Image (cartoon, rainbow, N blue to C red; front, side, top):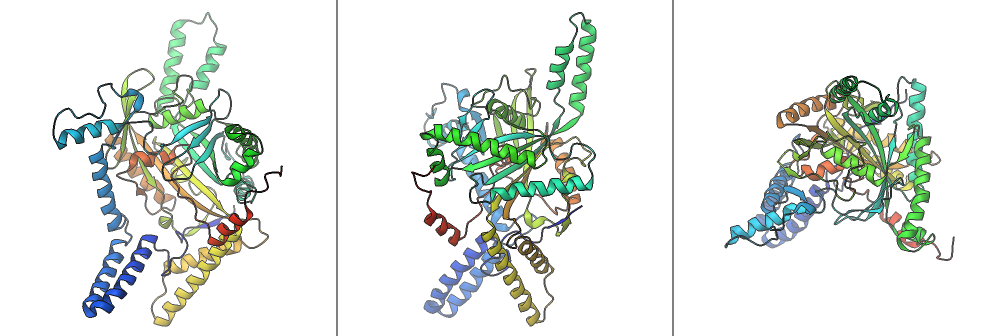
Length: 537
């Protein structure tokens, strides 16, 4: 089976070499500029202050297995602010009582703060789903979600239910073909004519959903069947559903509302009507590409079906396919955040009150052990995990045009070679991390050679685990971290203090990944290219 090198580098090389974050780079540059002025003005005291400030920046941004001191400080500040403003709690705005109007029930600052917290609790969307609307929501047609999150560019998304590439025993040749086909599909997103620029592949491990089986039984059931037999069979189905787990797979495509997209839609019709006509062609195209990627049966998900999936991910006791009774506009459950979890509350399908505890982690790229991996590298977190843990794994990929990716890889190779040579000249042992980064950069450069048809990619991974209690969640976390180690992931970065928003990173909404930066040259060429002549077809 073919292998690819994964790990060894977490991003392009920084201004000072290596893969240090932008925070450290910007901090050291600011300290350097301010220090130069202070040294000229104050001489020795200014020089000492500059050295101390640089040391503080370096230590504050030093990476550890629990994050840097700066990150931990920011987390505590964030948590205190969320508690102060009341955004640790969420309830759908439709459930807001009439007497909650933001008016304080008393005098003084404390009463005003309490009234503000009560008002802030009731919102249109939970954290992570803010700004989600529908462009198309009709019954039986693909649901097109229109996202306008604050501080981010607007985009459209469509979810596709897929069977997955492996549906039983498969040969190594088939796995290689499937991996190559998936790569070819992603490469098409890097072409100049592609309007879709990001793909989210999502695997949900959930209790067995018996809805389809029950529907089949009712269609085949003899009207004269004894009631006791029917009730006995229903009990068997219920018990099996509660004890077993299954996997459901989704792929979400994301179309940014760029000038190119808007201009292309305008050629098909006015305003949003043109958008829908363009998306109809785009959905057909992406569906064909996903089928070509050996993902089996591919079905665009309707708005009601997507809302049912969202409700299920908040309360896994609700069947993932039960869409008949879901609120398409507000499939949200009330929740409250703790430091390390978000807790959703509501009623189960039988009307009984229940709670679900969720915790989400980022798969940190720098925590991936460097080495060759097959397309089954993530299996320890999915099919090979022997524990009944409800979980969702989301991997988002945004394609980088080959020219940009090749330029970045070339720069990284040059920087790593220079850093290694500098270490040799100093007579110190060369860094194993630097050598691993150089090997990975060279592999990228080889893959991106002209004529290969390959493009670069930025990606992000998130994992959410769910349980019915705090104790079960703690146990699930320990087992998931062990499984991550078996997959070659040294550590998981639990996104504490922002767990509600983090959970949405594993919902089929294509959120939770910062856009991949484009080079200045690519940006300029895009501006010069424009959006085409209005008269053109």
